[in-house]
Amino acid sequence: SAVISQKPSRDICQRGTSLTIQCQVDSQVTMMFWYRQQPGQSLTLIATANQGSEATYESGFVIDKFPISRPNLTFSTLTVSNMSPEDSSIYLCSVENDRTKVGGQETQYFGPGTRLLVL
Amino acid sequence: AQKITQTQPGMFVQEKEAVTLDCTYDTSDPSYGLFWYKQPSSGEMIFLIYQGSYDQQNATEGRYSLNFQKARKSANLVISASQLGDSAMYFCAINTGFQKLVFGTGTRLLVSP
Image (cartoon, rainbow over all chains, first blue to last red; front, side):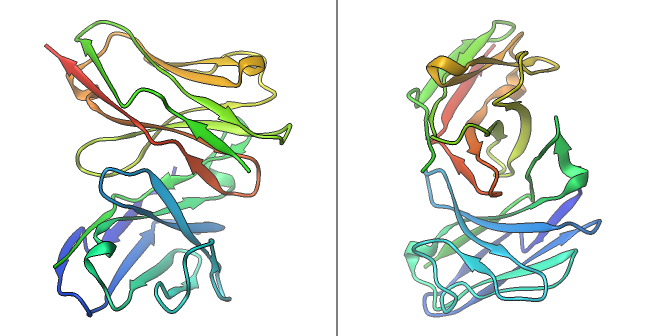
């Protein structure tokens, strides 16, 4: 499996501001994803970060609110823009490629997450 | 569309006992993968075990095993010899090949001494 780190691990932000979360992998991976986990809830996929092109967003998530960059095969950022208290969540990145296969199936491995509290 | 249902919001087990966490799924795709993840209070998601829809045998990984009943569309996680460190949230998820994991609502497991 890949070793994944996220920065920051946690932050407290004021409403109306923006926060950029970084996801770094120790090896090149094909697929990188960003998830949101609101308090007491399950994980919801925000978008797939595509290397060299615009991210693919899931229904209910837009680029203006959650801009994503992926400049290379080991790094991605997620920005939470114009934050409100409803954005308080854990944000997780995950990766998947041939090296993360289990039983022939690509398996997603997750970073440690970023806990965001918006006041 | 894929759906995962975890009907147990919370489960209690004594240390060294076995526990089963339920998961049922709904998909029209003939090929899919089922995953279990553990989320401790720290927030990270830890991959535990995988079962493919065409796998004939139930998956096992150390103390974790998956009771896969395809006709009933269930993929229950069995943890044997529970340890205090097993206390966490457990999520079942399904992937039908488009790299999109769909998660259930999770089950909180508490292991008591």
